[in-house]
Image (cartoon, rainbow, N blue to C red; front, side, top):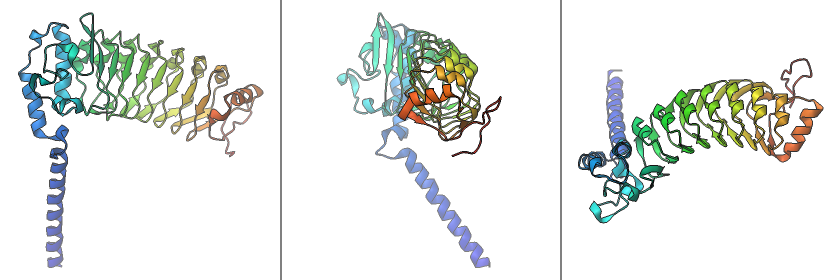
Length: 328
């Protein structure tokens, strides 16, 4: 027994050494500059040697916001930055004091209007100072390895038209402040780890045409206020922990073409108000406990959607209140 215990201790010790070594290699692999400690050190050194006071084509505060983004997401490890060396590469961040020449940045009328860094190996958090870009119209950070929370300061970007943060590892709740982005056309937060409830304040974004929160960890119910998004043509909340019923108010979204709410905990009857959605060509609600009314009006709408109907095959009892029954 004593020998067995000693053997188990030795095996456990060796296993812990192996795991520690493997973990260290995972974060310092020489073939992955985005995870190298030297990369982070060089990023900090580049920031320390750069002064926004020397920039002339945008305000200092906007320059500082970009530099903060570079620092907090390990700029040296970005895909487009990995070959940067001195002034030889004019589009490299911090290599020139001309912000308009930086990769993915557009400047118009002496203000930053676009930051587009799609699939560029950004690793880290989006800094709160992103709110210092008040004239920003497009924020494209999809397809990276961003973590942490969505900054509350995004709500300050009242000229922002597209917020694309899809396919990262962002977590935490959606800030209420995002309801202040009254020029927003596209809200794309799919494929993250965002949690908490959908803020009712998002119903204030009445200019939205795309509302995409799919494949996250959202919980609670769908707010009635989202029925105010009367310009939305695509509504996605699939693969979340959303529960409760569908709000009647969603029947106000008369421009809606695609409604994607599958693989959630939603239940109850699909509201009869949905028959107002005459432009819908795709309705995905499989993987839920939603049932279909059997009224002639509803069946006519279902026929109108046609091959785009992907449901549960659950039919509601034809009582004063629709209740789901097992009928497949």
